[in-house]
Length: 188
Image 1 (cartoon, helix red, strand yellow):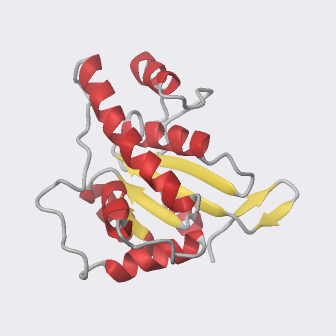
Image 2 (tube, rainbow, N blue to C red):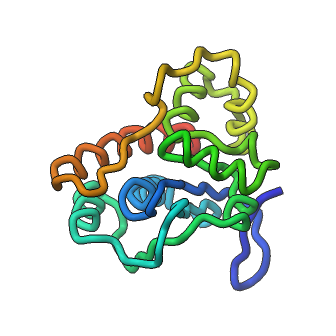
Image 3 (tube, rainbow, N blue to C red):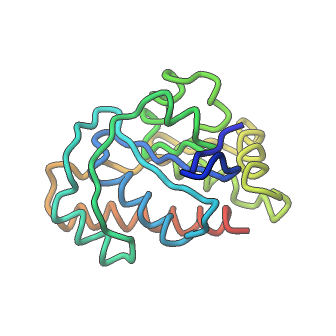
C-alpha cells in the first residue's frame, strides 16, 4: 500500500501526486494549493512533469500561487519517475496525456491515476459514502464506465507555457477551482 517515509520511520499517510508536462505551472499550482487546503501531517502533496528539467518556478507562477493562497517556498521542477507513482495513493494528471504517461511508467497504478477534473467529475454525486481517502480513490475508479465520460479534452486544463500572464492566471484559476473541490472530497 502506498505511503511515505518520515525521518523517524514509515508513516501510513496519504499522498497525492500532480503531473503536468514541465512541472512549472499547472502541477505546482495544484500541489501548493492542495497542500494549503489540507495541511495535515499525514497528508502529502507532490508534483512532477513528464518532460521536466530541474529549474525553479518563474516569477509569474510564483506570484499567482502566492495570490491564491499557496505556500511559496523553494521549488525545483521534478521529472516524473516510477517511484513517485508507486508512492502516491492518488495520481492526478492535468491532461489525459499526463495520466497516460503515469500509467505507462507504472501500469499497476491504473486504478489510482486520473486527470484532476476526471477524478472530481467521477466523485460528483458519489455522496459521503466514500469513507477514507483511499476509499474515495477506489470509488472513483469503480465509477469509470458508469459515469458518462467527458467529451474531448474537457477533463484537461491547457498548458499556459509561452502565454501572457493573464492566460497563466486563467489556467491557475481553473486548477484552483478543481483543487478546492478535490480538497472537499479528500477532507471528508
